[in-house]
Image (cartoon, rainbow, N blue to C red; front, top):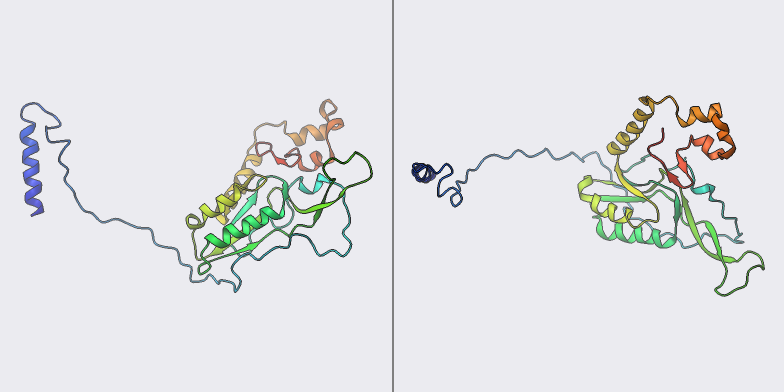
Length: 258
C-alpha cells in the first residue's frame, strides 16, 4: 500500500515538472514519510557504583562551637591563590568548582543544601560537602555608632574559599546531563565565579592549561621577567605575585597568564 501511494505521488510530481516547473506545483504541499532505524548510544553501566547510606547534604550549623569566640583581623590571604585542599575528586563524578576566591555565608550554604536536596533523586544520586561550615568571624558595628571605641562585635561567621576549591561533590547512577541543570543553578547564585565539572572535563581543563604553559612561544614570561628583575619590577610586586607567577590578582584568577 505504501509503495502504491509513493508511486502515485511521484507520478503527480513528475507531471507537474512537464511545464517547466523544476520544483513542481505540489512540491511544497506533499511530503513522503519514510521510516528507518535509529541508532542509540549504549547507556552507561553503573553496576559498580555503590551509593552511601546518607545521600543528602547534611545541615550545617550557622556558627562554630567555640566556647570563647575570638575576633580576628580581616586577613584576605585566605581567599587569595589556589586551593591546596579539596581540589580533587574523591567519590563523586561531578562537582561545583570555585573559579575565584570569596566568602561563603551561611545563607549560601543553606541555599546549596535546599536546592540540591529538593531537586536530586536520592534513589540514584548522592551529594557530599567539600567545604567546612562557617568558622571565620566577621565583626560589625551598629548603625549610627561613632568611629573609634575598638573593634565591633562578631556579627556572623563565613567560610573562606580559594580558586580551585570543590564546593559540592555529586555522584551516583546519573549522567552529567541529568544533574547539570541543578548544579548550574547553584553555581550561578554563589558570591564568586563557579563552574560545573566532571572528572573528564576537569582533566581536560587542567591539561589545556598545562599545554598552554608548555607550548608557549613567548620567551618573556612573567616568571622570567621577575627572575631577571627587569626595570626593577620586584619593587611593585608582592610575595604572592612571586609565588604564583602573577596568575592571581587578589582573589581573581587570570587564566590567560602563563
